[in-house]
Length: 269
Image (cartoon, rainbow, N blue to C red):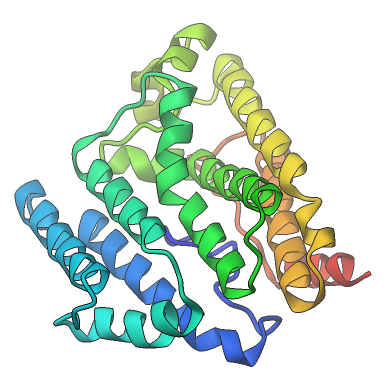
């Protein structure tokens, strides 16, 4: 499951056990709603932050053993949090990250970006592990690596899209290191310097994805299959980025049905 319009990665696919689909969709509805508040429509920053704070207040009600007021949060409580005893901190982390998206459009270094992913992506993976009853620290760490990598991969394939929203997720010190300016992003200029920069960033994402990938074999049954598919999907996007020489301005990589057939086959066997 993914949060930020990550159509390249499955959101509770048919590989997921039926008993976990309702809580998964309840979690996704919360994350999707919060992300849309931060990112979609014409609302000003003050309104976006206000609406996100309303969701936070709903979480506060749940934390105090009170009934939330909105159908969205009642569904989250009744279908996910209560029956599966989910921790609330991951939901607070997601809201914190989405609120940051409203006010922060540049990242000084890779550490800042990873800290953002820690709150915007990693909570989703941890919640999924909780649904399956997996709560050991090693699994959490491997899941964090996968989720952070997927977040980074989407940043790199969405450089042009994010620029239209006045956002640059490529760390500022890396832009300087490789001699790439924001004007080049605005112009969609894919020169050797930009290609080197993107290859560098994609290599970072690949290493994180690779480090977390053993979790897909450790976890048994459908969860392991689902995770292997997600990891393979991320690797495929990285391959497509390399294949188009990182020209994300004219050919944003997407996974087609042939890609998914290959991914499913490889994940199963």
